[in-house]
Amino acid sequence: MDESDDRWIAATASALLAAEHENVPVEVLTRRLPGLRLETAYRVQADIVARRIAAGARVVGHKAGATSKAIQEQAGVDEPDSGVLLDDMVLHTGSAMHRSVLMQPRVEAEVAFRLGSDLSGPGLALEEARAAVKEVFLALEVIDTRFTDWQVTIADSIADNASCARVVTGPMVALEPDLDLAAEPVVVSVNGTAVATGEGRAVLGDPLRVLVWLAGRLHRFGDGLRAGQLVLAGAVHASLPLEAGTTVHAHSPHLPPVELHVR
Image (cartoon, rainbow, N blue to C red; front, top):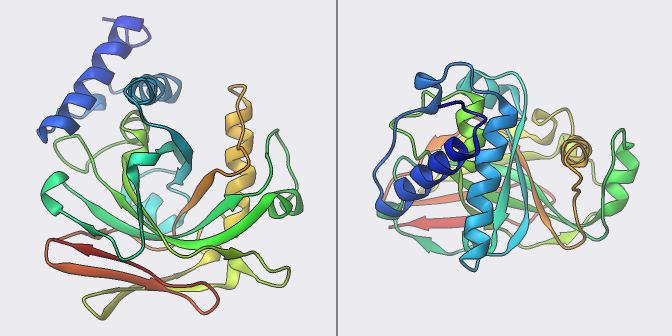
């Protein structure tokens, strides 16, 4: 069946939703279709999101993925991707999560935003993006794959909603005019031991550039970023395995810390 066929899109979306629901992974798409187009992968993602909305979920924002060299090298990709954040994926700092509800989870620390105004269109200036931000915060993104392993292409990840499973939000603070997010160092600890670090500049040179990229990508599909939405800018370090019995903590000099307990 042609990958662009509506029936293939629907069947693939059904298989990925079933994999998540049943906790049983499926074969990596590009092993059967090596030439899977990104456009087609985004159609699968949109089908999955539409079904989850129909079942009662609500869109609360977007995530950008593979925005840092560390993640691009780890994943073997050379461009970012994006996914959709739904309300049932969001946890607040200090929350506990059961490892058993996910399949192959990993965790990433990120700079994230809550928008105060809409942001749309191609070729936005960095200052336009900054002006649209109401609050900034640290987040832990729990990524997972519904495929048999992490040997996936960017097309596979996109179809799988950019591998996003959960988002843990830290306390949100106003984006002060003099705060240089590119220079903000983030330290990640597991059970009290520092295991990773990275600066904001790791993601496209400045986390605010992710807003520019994402607004441009969404604009091509007649969409945009909306006031009140959350946006994850992508990991500032290579992702880490997420194991039961651990506490993951991220902190930086100017943003409140964020923490997740894994049972």
